[in-house]
Image (cartoon, rainbow, N blue to C red; front, side, top):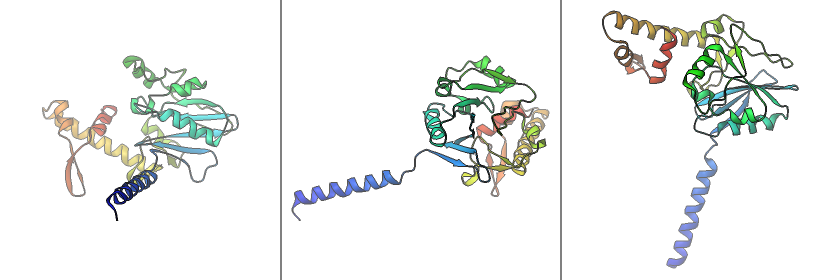
Length: 239
């Protein structure tokens, strides 16, 4: 083969390989209908996920998950592929910014923002620039009715006590699992309580809290490993 033809052929082959690789790269988001429901969906973007409920009267969505990325715009586009009903509510499940940041596109469409009073206090204290302020606050319990839709905010312990079968957490589980069970919630709560008890024991023995938290280790697959930072932060809710 003449050299010029070889160069062209090589370039075309390289371009084809790049195009194939790009075609095989999945988008960072996906929307899935929850099995056994007619109107409940999970929107996942990267390592985060949120849920939304569709009714003829409107949509109830949860966390925009838009910290430093355009997830909210994509989230809205995914909802609008399913329904043209207005997005009536956006509910913050808790006050962590990686879940609640980036909601302005929802607000621009007229959505009302709702969260527990503790989340409101945290947001007002830190005043994050990319978090939409709340329109409504929940105390002990609040039910939002749009047709058959229902959503409430409460603690992990209270969720376990309620009558439900499946849970949609803010992050997918092992293997990309989107749905959890009551047993999963019990296991997470017990795990955090065990970690909290270990920190308390260390501080009772004279170690300062920061060192006790940092030095926590758990046994996984037969080996001790440090507790991830996001799990250590969760201990603040289990003093």
